[in-house]
Image (tube, rainbow, N blue to C red; front, side, top):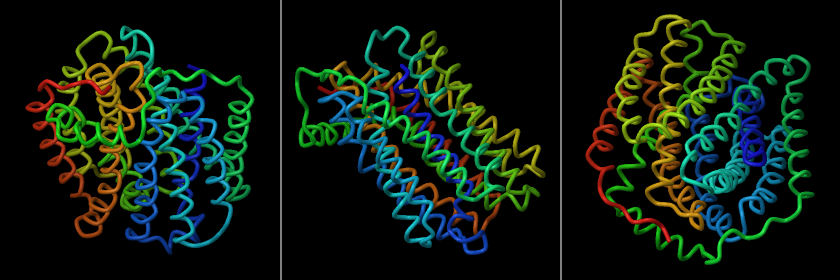
Amino acid sequence: MLLPILSLFTVSLGYGVVVPLLPELSGGAARITPGTVSLVYATYAAAKISAQIPGGVWADRKGGARVLSLALPLFTVSLAGFLISGGTVWFAAVRAVEGAATGLVYPAVFALVARGSEQGSGRRIGLAVGLGTSGLLLGPVLGWALAPVSLHAPVWAAIAIAAALSAWVALRPPASAPSSQPRTVKGELRELSTLGRNVAFLGLMLPIAFNKLTFSAFQGLIPLHAPTLDLTLRGVTGLFALTGIVFGAFQALGGLLADRFAPRRLVLLCSPPLLACLVALAFAEGATRFTVAYAGYIALSSVIFTATLKHAARAFGSTDTYGGVFGVLGTLTDLMTIVGPLLFLGVYGSAGAQVFLLMAGLGALSALGYVFLSNSQAPRLG
């Protein structure tokens, strides 16, 4: 469990360091518009999406540790790119490298965590994701603490951590390949085509797709919406830190609940209050009310995320195919991380806080789709 946790922690920390500082790193907040923010986030998402299926196939064939031995050094190189001032196009390219590295990390990590007995798999997933994504907490804290010394100081700290983990992975004894039936990208794409037409799979992935649709937009919306809430840069980094605390804590809780109760039931119970939190954001006046509603959204999204991952592993996966399952699931749902910023940041430019009502409306449609589709019979990969 240590390697998956440390790997997720490292990419989460790097993400948490960079995102709040992107306006300043790219030349100052005055030069950032919703359009440029959308470009930077979309290139990250596109690269992450492109890497996940090959990363999942590779994890099934050679083992998750082998994938991480390439992905972590690549992530380290991407962080170093933020030390160079090159404008919007440069930062979009650097974020593309960061996204590709992250896209390799996630299916490898989930493949490592999911293997083992089904009993307790929710706890393992919740623990790995909860502790791993705590980097989202430390990242903004590093940014807040070190940025006054130097804008690049937090980035250097993240580079040092990523480089140290990369060296440790490189020095570990090589692990044996987990699968006796090697899988190919061509074969995986064929199975992806089958899953993409499967009603049960499409229904199951809707909660994660909606989570990514909205959460990816919040990364850009929070800095843009901050002035209306009288939030300074410190307040923005505080909200990102709160994201890490709440998400990590409720991942662990969600894993335990998913082992005790049916994952589908958890998703159905958590969806209505999550939509209520999004509606509350549209009418929140001041930082305190916004923070409470936002924290509720993060907590409920976290439980839904863990429950759906366990549901996917149990319904579609096997020991030799977990990397492929999570690669496929990640690829299809991560398409929403491209749509989210483009859609919601554009709407925010004309409608302001009413954008959160649009989020709630789309969430209601997603929940209805999950109710009617996720119970259908589905085949396992492999």
